[in-house]
Amino acid sequence: MTAPSTEQAADAPARASSSATFAHNRSLDGLRAIAVLVVVVAHGSTRFLPPEMRFGGGAVGVGIFFVLSGYLITSLLLRERAATGRISVRDFYVRRALRIWPLYYVVLLLHLLVLSRVDAGPPLGGTWLSRDAPTYSSLGDVGWSYFLFLQNYVASVQEVRLGLGVYWSLAIEEQYYLVWPPVVILLTAARVRWRLALPAFLVVAIATSLVARILTLEGHLPSAPGGVEWMAHTNIFGLAVGSLLAWVRWDSDHRGRPGAGGGAFGAWLAWAVVVLLVLRRWVYAPELGVRIGLSHAEIYEPLLLSVAVAAIVDRVVTHEWRWSPLRWAPLVYVGRVSYGVYLLHPIVLGFLTAWLTGTGWVEMGLFILVSTGVAAVSYELFERRVLRYKRRFSHVRHADVAPEVGSAGRDDGDAAEPGARTAAGGG
Image 1: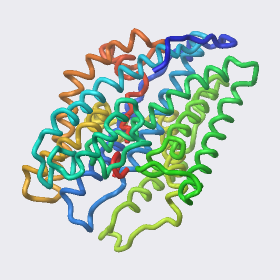
Image 2: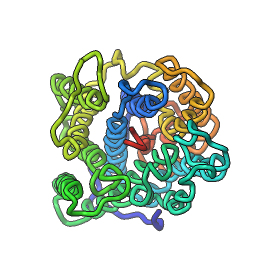
Image 3: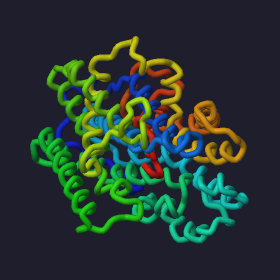
């Protein structure tokens, strides 16, 4: 976190009233639900499905989370500037802490203080590390990094297993948002054409991350234990592309073209790309009879996914249809509690694999239901109570949101932070 500070923007906008409102979009909750379900199915498949049906596409879910998080939070930053003529760094970090930290540290302490004392056999030992595990001592070498959001550069899933492995994406998000708001403030306060400087900065950041990713994959730059997916500087694509989309939407609104967005064909093409990236992660797809391969996908896949998801988000926020499947009430609710689903599903997975003797899609369905149920209890009894304090630090009015949730429940996008979350965080 940073010391409380508020920076004054160079000029106050003329359209503060319209820009001060940020309407909640239920379809984005539905998209968030799809993201977390992809992660959950990816992890559950390692326990409940035969080897030929195991699914390693959790990275797709993580990428969706990143784009949503970048879009929603950057939108709020820009609208705060438009509404008040400034961006409060202090209030941004307070809101961020209230959204991420409470459940983050509760589950972290649960792993370190409680689950580490569980006598874990093979089923549980594959989910979290216990004192009876041969590699338990490695947890002591990297455990400190989780309290400082540095685990993505220090730990690996082999050391901490899935239970703490999903935390890597949260570290990337926190590192990105440690830097991004001050950058927005500096560019908007400087004597430059900041409406061009902001997107230019993001494009340069994306290009730099791509170059760093290539150099790391080729061995010219050092890699963290978790690989290029875990490091912020080699996997900034989703957050930066989401932030770029937020600027495009904000700029269109200020130019009097709030409905100008991507076409339906582009959105359907984007969905096809996402589905393709999901299917290619299947070890083997009997329905297709072949594997789907992409040459050198480890280089460009995150960027390709981010652009596709951004096209979907753009279509959703500019052409909202009330009959959209993304607005289905159960899907919307799963999206609302997705942060809890993301952090808590490894614990559910460990206990269910110890209790259930069978495997198959029935067991997978039970895993999804229990994970969602546990997350719902966490949200209703714990997270929601904490989120109410966020409205005290919010400067953007949220339209079409129930008062009891309001900015407290939607500010900063409630993304997940899941974020989160590939091998460890998303398969």
